[in-house]
Amino acid sequence: MINPMVGMPQGLEWLVILAIVVLVFGAAKLPDLARSSGQALRIFKTETKGLRDDKDDVDEQKTPEELELERRDQTQAPAHNEASGEVLRERRDDTTA
Image (cartoon, rainbow, N blue to C red; front, top):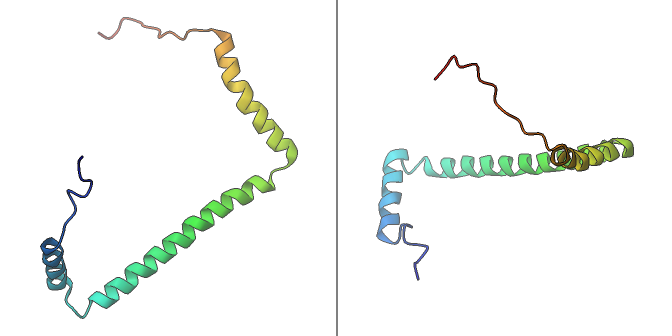
């Protein structure tokens, strides 16, 4: 069986990566970097949760008539396309090869 962790850094690789990060950013800036990335993730989580909640609110604001019309459109659209039996063909005018 193939180990799914084959490409993941282990042990010594993590130490090398940590040393490079300390050299690039400096030891004094690392806490600020970690704090700002944590704040960015927290903001991202709240915004995505807000978007999901907004989507639910939009569905609740629709009237029952609007919801019924949407359901009819969704059920009639596939049936209409299959029942028509029309075949769409490309018209050619022999101007291009």
